[in-house]
Each structure stands twice: as structure tokens, then as C-alpha cells.
Amino acid sequence: MAPVPPGIRFLASFNRDQWYRAFTFTLTFLLYTSFHLSRKPISIVKSELHKNCSQIMEVQTESIQLPRLHPGQDCSWKPFDRNNYKQLLGAMDYSFLFAYAIGMYLSGIIGERLPIRLYLTVGMLTSGLFTCMFGLGYIYDIHSLGFYIFVQVANGLVQTTGWPSVVACIGNWFGKGRRGLIMGLWNSHTSVGNILGSLIAGYYVSSNWGLSFIVPGVIIAIMGVICFFFLIEHPNDLKTASAQSSAPSNQKLHKSWNGVNGHKDLYLQYTPAAKAQSWDTELLLGQESIGVCVPVQQVVVVKSEAEPSPISFMGALRIPGVVEFSLCLLFAKLVSYTFLFWLPLYITKAAHLDAKKAGDLSTLFDVGGIVGGILAGVISDKMGKRATTCAVMLLLAAPTLYGFSMISQFGLGPTIGMLLVCGGLVNGPYALITTAVSADLGTHKSLKGNARALSTVTAIIDGTGSVGAAVGPLLAGLLSAQGWDQVFYMLMTADFLALLLLLRLVRKELRSNRNRPGVAVEMKEH
Image 1 (spheres, rainbow, N blue to C red):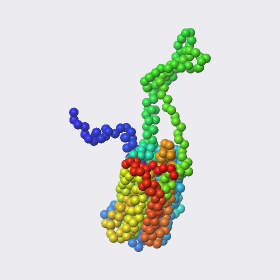
Image 2 (cartoon, rainbow, N blue to C red):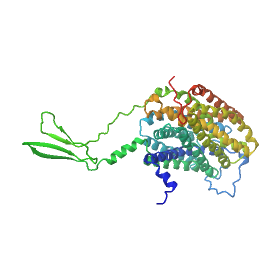
Image 3 (spheres, rainbow, N blue to C red):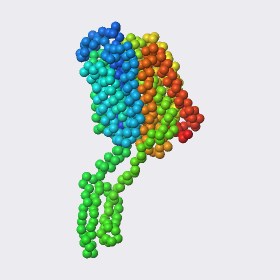
């Protein structure tokens, strides 16, 4: 007999549950990739909304350009043509992120009480709608600041359906073993979405920036439809489906009358698909109806256990570590989202590049973020110390940011290197807290197996982080008017504060006994 190829042996080693786990991992990865893909275009389009009118860039003849709908508007897009354009762009970012932060607290609570699949589907479809609406502002020549602010607020609210839903789903499928590595790999969807969003937006930005929003909006809406048809929320859903499919399609109750000792005896006959293991005879109507009997075949009764009640907001805050990690994420996400929304514009001004080239270059920050998130997960699994891993990366991030602000003036090569390093150190703690740490805390032993709490805990942590995500880009818009150095000082201060907030947990981890590799530290009650 010919030997089985190694690839086939590898595939055969996967059982049914592992296949579904891999499928859920891939699907949720793609679903949240589309969320970030739809958020990224605004950072690419900023440099197109406000141009340097004295240095209008010539159209490159070698590149394929789509026909412009508004050829007469060679300069900035009203109302962003004013001198305070940075404040206006910052306000637009703040509108999205503030609505996102407020909505996140509500989203986790609502998400616990609704089916994840339906909740996520509705959120993705409406997010696609509002993302397209922003692009339609170009198509229909809309110059009202109020219109763009409204779209950003609405989109920020509906996008909060995404994160608690996908984290709860992935947390249901994967246990604590190697959770840091698995979620480090999975969380790269953030950077992958940013990269794809930059490339799509960059392709259209110079010719028709409306399509920079419309195309991502259509993509996230399509992914919402896929979510509706294919997402499996919990492994128990498979067991329920299997039990239902194994039940007979032709279950019937048959009445038969037989004469026994002159009596008419009523028998109810049940014919399930499963094999009968025993037959019992029970009285149908009690002692008074002697002789009226039921031959009872094996009946499989699925015991319906009461579903755990959703955890309260204050109950989630009392879980050890939730408050510290939430406040730490506030400052860590402030730094990450400032880069997300302002890095392409900074590169455009500092390196004197056009919007497309600056957008392409900014993707290196996200590449570094992928590596950083995976490394943070692997290291924290190996050490069993999530807080310590985050603290070390935050400690290294602050001086690296200062170096980036200096070295970006010395040419393209050093800038590329610092973008990769900064991306890893800035996004590593952010990725670890929003995934593995959130899942650890959402399944903490104090919850006694209440898996429904995971959505609320995740929403509290990410919602608090989103407050920082809203404040960071707004401050960047205000401080950049005084020079970009002020922005980098603000980012370094935020990293330092994030580090301080973790010191108590770091001290507890270092005092604790060495944990087994691959097992996260259980933070005890305090």
C-alpha cells in the first residue's frame, strides 16, 4: 500500500470540532478585517480634502487615473479649505471616535441579550451604508460639515457592534491554552484591515476620493451577509444542530386499542430513531385507571438548564484587573489611533509625498503592528504574565516615538525602519489587552462559568480604550498647529501613563510563583 502523503495525514488529523474552530477563526478574522478596512480611508483622504494650493501636484502620466467628477476643484474640498482645517479634520475624527466610545459601553450589554450573528450582521450592513454615504458626499458635491459629522457619528455608533461580538465568539471557541498566540495571530486583522483600507483608498484618492469610501462600504456590507449565513456563535450550537438533525422527521403517536381481561387498554406508541434500551410500563391516569398502561420506549430528554443571567456593569468592574487594564488601554489606544488617523498626513507633510505614496508608506506601521501583536501573545503565553509583557513594550515605546520624530527627517530608509519598530511596540500592548487579556478577564474564575459576561467585559475594556482613541486624534489636530513635535510629546506622555497604570499588576505578577508555560496568570481577588 502506498504511503499516505504528509499533507493528507495532517488534514486527516483534524477532527470535526477542529475544522469548525479553524473556520470560525478565519471567518471572524475576515469580518473584523472589513471593519478596519472601512475606517482607514478617512486618514488617506485627509491630505486630499486639504491640499497645498500653491503646490498642486501634477497628474502622473504613467498611472491610470479615473475621470474626475469635479475637474474645476483643483484645490481643497470645502469646508476643509480653511486655515483651521486641522481642527476641522480632528473634529471629524472625534465625532466618530466619541460616538464609538459611548456606543461601546452599550453595545456589550445589548450584545449579551441578542444573538451575536444577527447583531453583528445588522451592524455590518448599517456600517456599510454610512461608509458609502461619506463617499457620496463627493459624488453629489456636498460641502456641509454637518453632513460629514452626522455620518461619522452614525458610523461610530453602529461599528461598536463588531468588537464585543467577534471577541465573544472567538472566546467561546478557544480556551486559555496558548490564547495569547492564537489571539495575537487573530488580532492581526486590525493591521490587515488598515493595510487593505490604505491600498484601496490610495488607489482612488487622487481621482475620485468618494470611491475610497464606497468600495470599503460595499465590502463590509457583503461580509455582513456572509456573517448572517455562516457564523457559528458557540460550539454548543453545533451540538444542538446535531441533536435536531438526528431526531426523526416522522415521529408519530399511534393509538391502539387492545382487549385485555375485558378492558379496553389504551397504548401510546412512540417510535424514535434511537435504539430502545429498555421498556417500562407506567400508569397513564394514576391508580384509578388500572389497566390503562403505556409501553414507554427510551425517551431522550434534553435537560434545559437556565441560561446564566447577563452580568451587570458594576459586576464586570469588580472582576480583578478590569479597571487597571481598561485605563491602561485608554492611553495605549490613544497612541495607536492617533497614528491610525494622522500618520499618512504627517508623512505627506514631513516627507513631501503625495497622498497615495504616504498612504502606502503608512502601511509599514501596520506591518510592524502585526509582528508586535503576535510577539506580545507568544511572550505572555510563555511567561504567563500579561501585564508584565505590556509594561515592557510600553517602556520601550516612549523613547522609540521620540526617535521616530527625529529620524523621519533623515530620509526614507530610516523612516521605514522606525515605522516598523514603532508599529510593533505601539500596537503590541493594545492588541494583547483587547484580545487575550479581555478573554481572560471575561472568563475569570469569579464568574463561575458565565460565558455571557465576556461580551460586557470586552465592551468595558475596549469602550474605555475608545475614549482615548477619541481624545488622541482630537489633541493631535489641535497640537499639530503648533508643530508636530508637540504631538509626539503627547504620545510619549500617554505611553508613560499607560505604564504607570499597570505597575500594581506587574508587581503582583512578579511576586507570584512561576506559572506553567502557556497559562495566563489568574488575578486573585483583592
